[in-house]
Image (tube, rainbow, N blue to C red):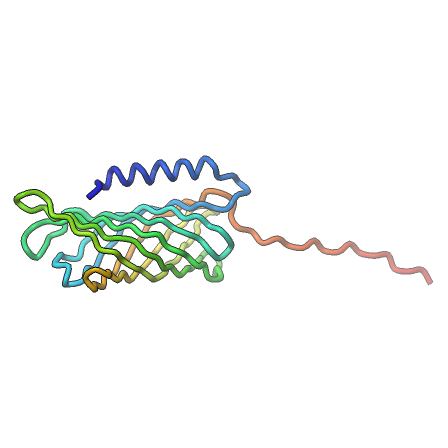
Amino acid sequence: MPSFNALSTLLLAALLTAASTASAEGPPITFSGGGTYNIFDDDREVDDDYGYFGAVEFRFTERWAAEFWLSDAEDIEGDNGFDVDALRWHLDALYYLKPRGNLHPYLAAGGGQLEREWDVPNGNLDEVDSEANFGGGVHWFFTDNFSLRGDARYLFGFDDDTSDFTVSVGLSYRLGAPQKRRVAAAPEPQPEPEP
């Protein structure tokens, strides 16, 4: 299984490339990072555990965005007595609902993989499971560009018919101009006709 360091380095390079091409007038790109709590299906034979995540979101319209998500949970205790590292990635579509003040709620759905690496006595045992996910979350903007983010997802594993849940909390930074609605200019007053 590729190491988290290698994947996070690739993600960082992609983020820096995206950031260098973003302009103040361009669509916002949002970087997020924080902690996760993973609730694994009993069939996975691992304990629920904490981890961390990183994500980059590309906003295409006022409502639609795409997001790449990468999370890692290390040294999770397995039911068999062995530890397992869990690396999860997915590519998601986000649909933003109507903002309510500083709260920007969204719905999310997408697909990806969960890669597990078991630390067994004779080396490592790797398992990969394709997944679909759906859920939602909210950004609470405390400045024009910084927000606190909360997110909850249901994840279905196709290979073993598993159901996992992930809850995350983190900090987000929006690079680029906030989406502002254009306001039509008021018509200039017309002189009244003379009698």
